[in-house]
Amino acid sequence: MGTLNPVEETGQSGFFATRADFLVNWGRKNSLWPMPLGLSCCGIELMAMIGPKFDLARFGAEAARFTPRQCDLLIVAGTLTWKMAQACRQIYDQMPDPKWVIAMGVCSSSGGMYDSYAVCQGVDSILPVDVYVPGCPPRPDAVIDAILKLQKKIARESPTGRLAGTGEAIVDEGTGVLHMPPNRAVERSTLDLHPHDPRARRAARESK
Amino acid sequence: MSATTLERVRRALAGLEFEELAARDGMPTLGLAPEDVHAAMERLAHAGRFSTCILVTAVDHLPDEPRFEVVWQLLSVAENDRVRVKCRLPGDEPRVASVSDLWPGARFSERECWDMFGIRFDGLADHRRLLMPEEYGHHPLRKDFPHQGIDPGRLYREWDRARRAQQGFPAQHPDELQPQR
Image 1 (tube, rainbow over the protein chains, first blue to last red):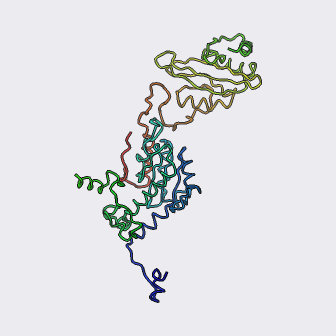
Image 2 (image 1 turned 45 degrees about the vertical axis):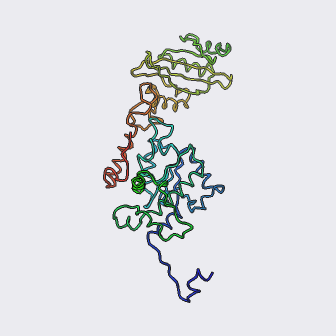
Image 3 (image 1 turned 180 degrees about the horizontal axis):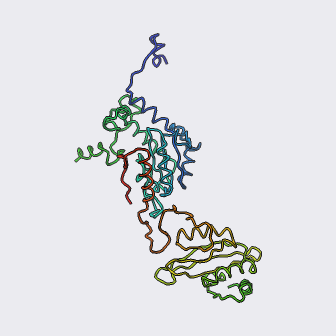
């Protein structure tokens, strides 16, 4: 016990050194507030995910607010029609920065089976999307996996760089996990990266 | 074809010209000329005791002329039977009488039929589209409409440009991809 408490050990108030990027990211990724935009059957799986059985509270993302002004994670769950696209974009615009988007299910990822005049062929034609979840509808486990992937992604961001407006919002390899305890370290597998991610391209170049 | 239903329909429509059509499901089916539709429907509603208009829809027989076939299905709750009424309309400017004065619930079906097939209903007070946006400009269930649509994101992009101009954003946000279709 004592080893964890610098006040007990030294008799002085302790301090704790870390990087601002890490601390901010740690706070952000473990308290995502989702804005559920349930547009069709995926909305039912979303409800199951937030409910007690799958218990999203384990990952700190159960505080669904139903108002975009208090949320930082937009989950587009279901078929986005062009008529709904305006409302969806307005919801995204009303969310405060920083904000992330999960496209849940094939309909919101690509239009899915609705290759139709009325359906937007993927929310990425109107919003920047962070994580795509396949499935029709995806099981709650799959969406929880997407939230874990998003947490990894947030851990690699550089909030101070974003504030200063310098260069990329995503920091270079490794720096975002510098002070993580070893047993919780994020595996930096290139398999987890999007193929367009510069690090994935670099790894592909090096493996040749 | 149910004989008793047909008897009632014949009695109700005595003096009007109509055609008895064969239907694969056995439902009594009538064919009417466009100008007779409203008079015949009024008789079916009152003398025929068909108290409910179940649906108003249309079929597009594209290469054929007359091109459109409007279909009404009526239900008599008192007699527990149904009748189907059909009417063929020409391909350019299809119009037919509205039955929304007899069955007010038919307004929604007629608005949908206008939206999807572009068939005008004379006497329908409110001719807004039911499903598509008002400025959409096409009738998507017509057979000559491509199923992937004609520039389906057009209205969204117009709205988005206006919104960006109003909020002082550049016309296209650098993070975003160009709409694909």
